[in-house]
Image (tube, rainbow, N blue to C red; front, top):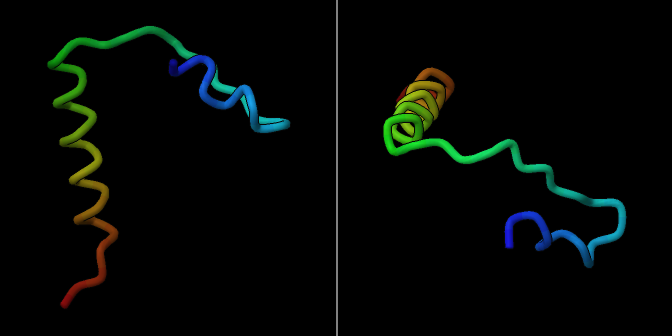
Length: 43
């Protein structure tokens, strides 16, 4: 699915570079949350 869902959109493509494990997914989420809190407007 992930390699083909852009096939119908002209000029768009997807390249997969493998799968990570659960620990890698958790680290990606932590990094994303950190970037968000660093860039979010301060109230």
